[in-house]
Each structure stands twice: as structure tokens, then as C-alpha cells.
Image (cartoon, rainbow, N blue to C red; front, side, top):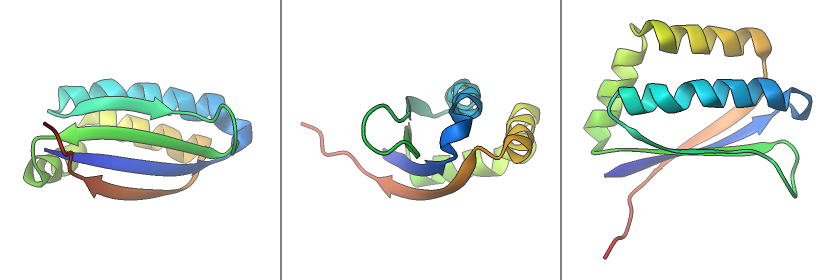
Length: 101
């Protein structure tokens, strides 16, 4: 299993728009074979940093998801909405593997 860890720098004046974007992605990732662990929005501390975590059984499964995204109407619509809203300034994507008992 791999977990994608996303760190976003967001426009602090557009948190509602980012939250809408986040709520749209959670069911998309789950529908497309991943397990979304949620988005984490600013509360205390930095007012412009948000995180998301989601897992796939393997890096190959994640790459398959990324390839299928381009043809998925819901994915395309969500990405287009964010292009209009511009709530995300930048993001970093990392992949991690869990250590479990």
C-alpha cells in the first residue's frame, strides 16, 4: 500500500472554495479504487496550509487512477472548477508507505 500525501498552499480568502474542491475529490478517489483519508484544513497555526491523504494498493494502482482521471467527467469537471476558483496556490505531492504491526 502507498499513501499519497498532499500539502497545499491555499488562498486563505478562498477556503470555502477549497473545501468544496476537497469534498468533491473524496468520493472520486474512493470510486476509482483508492481510500481517501480526508482533507485537513487550517484551524490553528498557518492559515494557508491544507493537507490531504489517500491510499492505493500500489504505486501501479495509483498510476492507473491518474491515467483514468483524464477521461473521467467528474474529475475533469472538478479540475476545471478549481481552475476558475483558483483557491490552490501550489501543492507538493509525496508518497509514503505505512509501517503496520
